[in-house]
Image 1 (cartoon, helix red, strand yellow):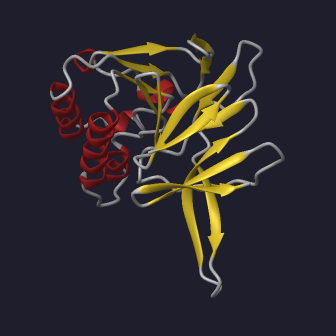
Image 2 (image 1 turned 90 degrees about the vertical axis):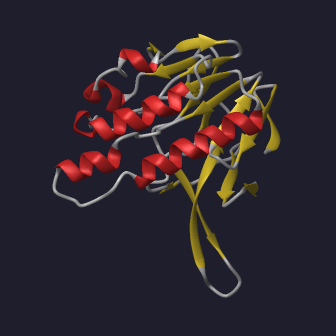
Length: 214
């Protein structure tokens, strides 16, 4: 967990692919039920990715001491992924955090998958909602209302070693107008981004966050 200043606010970036600010933990693109959705299309995948992601979310909440959770879109991957097994796994996670307020900024996948079941007790809001010093969004956009926190792009960065080895890692892309969080789901590819002047990039490498640009 490393401290960074974003829009004049002190934040922390977690290796669990989350951002912490003033007691609120932000994640993006959880894509719960993605493996189940693939399975419904005939691809033989188990639900191990979901269980691992839920455990990582539990660790992030515990380690950060966060009092609230905000998901910046794409909580559920698809309607086909809302299987009994997925619903039960998420319900068990929710039962372990009964007093945690959870908010979802509705993203493109959420619009197709449908809002979370009532039993998950997740408040759903639209993009562009202001929350303290930030504007919450799924799509990375500029907003006259303030600095934007977003996801959607699944940002990644390519790194090259001295021996020519190459590695692609998920990253936080901190732009002058918007911070784009890495996809929380590890069952989601990281899309390489090209930084511009004024950008900062922090790669997630196993259990640490590393500044790689500028």
